[in-house]
Amino acid sequence: MESIVLIGFMGAGKTTVSKELAAALNTRVVDMDDVLVERIGQPISEYFEEHGEASFREHETNLLKEALNEDSIIATGGGVILQPENQKELSDKLVVYLKAHANILVQRIREDKVNIRPLAIKNDDGDLKRLFFSREKLYEKLAKITVDTSGKSPQEIVAEIIQQVAS
Image (cartoon, rainbow, N blue to C red):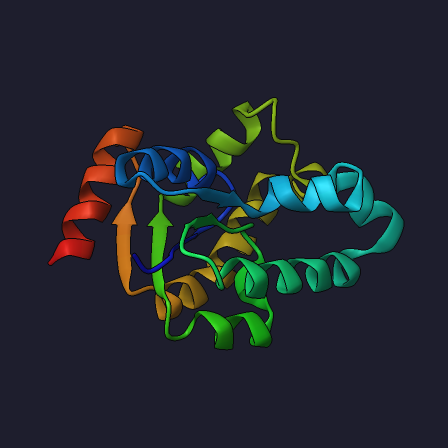
């Protein structure tokens, strides 16, 4: 099985869907944010503050390259698509864009008390929407498959991904 890479903005459901998809396909999942937290030894928000976004993105790129070498379901961070090097790495991979409406994404981000996102701390709702819209074209460009997650359960999203991958 070829790796399936999930991309999308914060709150799109990459972590949740990756676990469900990996279980359905009986394969392993690489949640890049979880692995990065383990490797850098602190929450991403703290790392951003202490070392800056550029340093974090370097770690992220190295992990992406590593993860793509093994067959798995890869849940990327929302900003993984920003680096030209990552775009090149993803250009010939099976990339699934988990898309949702901006208002839904902001609501999910604000309601999520487990994943505290650095960019959500320092940006208001309008800023988050602008950030989403600034990335949207890149997500669309890199995706082989796009699935709208708005109003769908993780199981429905997984079924749609499996159906589209098979066809």
